[in-house]
Length: 181
Image 1 (cartoon, rainbow, N blue to C red):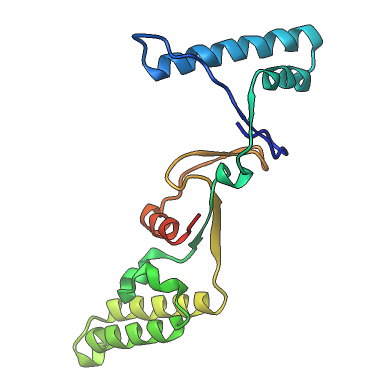
Image 2 (image 1 turned 120 degrees about the vertical axis):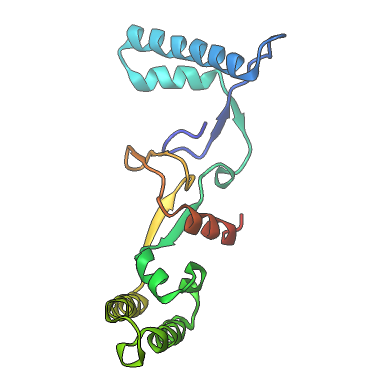
């Protein structure tokens, strides 16, 4: 447990019961700690005192806070349809030669789909629109910053809110692979 605003990590230990699975033991431990917290809250009518009483029962770890804090993931906030129209992979969005990559992809698609060369006018307009969107994004890239586990709900104590999983699961997974601990 890492309380908000603290640099101390607390652990609770509960002996395993024979014949029970770890989830049952964890549930029993959580019930005991919850009963302790609520008893102190009713006695003093102070939540912070109740929390301190529970933390007195914990073991204080010497591990670094960075070892338990969730990672920060940056995901490009660009339309996936633009990447699909130009047949560009998401992994190139962090490349220093992004402008050239977008331009080359646009030229390749324009050769295939230009109406003067027998292509579809609607498809060509989509390609041109995707090219404009991506070149504008490349000039001032915007990233979604996400703390926590990318594919799970996450409670952010700084904002006191639950954050939903990102819909770009594959892009987040790729971003997580690039981040090293």
